[in-house]
Length: 328
Image (tube, rainbow, N blue to C red; front, side):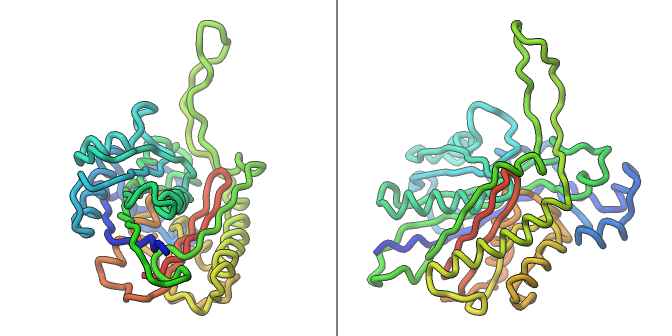
């Protein structure tokens, strides 16, 4: 039996911190209004940092913690919906930057669910024996696709990157009892436009389209209802697969989108809210980066003890949702 374990974590945030009071100068809003509705007070915003540069820093920290060299990395996955370049992919830029000459590298996009989907993909690769380890990174610079005149969205998002190094370890157990023990995922494309961002229009010598900038648009109420309902169902499904209950879980590391969503999920699961750590107040919604950044913060504070059971769960554009159960 192969156990896929997280042996290193890392994170990186832009230096610039933008407070709610700073945003009061840009749009018609207030610190009280933002905190009451979202739980966010500050966010880190790029002044030049890129998805690739933040990913690279987070990856290096994860490798350092795991005690691995870049040459030992087999696979690099970067989950992002805000890359600077269409080609080459961000994962290949990370591969070059850290010197992971033996790694296969590619990106995936499941928006805010991206890191959880990335862990799932890495787990599948490692369980087959195709690769022995992987760097899974969630990274975003959302500030470049946010409409800074739209007070309903610009107050929500921040930039950053988080990484986890996972390794396949031989286990004597006949059942999965260590590392990643369960995965549940889903998508609902019919509701895709409730959270969207257009890319380039089809502009060429044979079309009549006009190029325009695409910015994030969101139906907040629909996203809230979807997240509270579907995340709880997804978590329960992941737990059911391994005969666990909500009360068996020590830490719920959820996507940090909105404090009301986190509270809603906890209430729907009838779970102890103290088991839902959050850094939302200081970093905002960083899409695919939220879970790995929070995971790294908690890990470096020695929050997790050997044998602790964690649920990592993300939800976002697509619409997509996923949950991974991990025994630390």
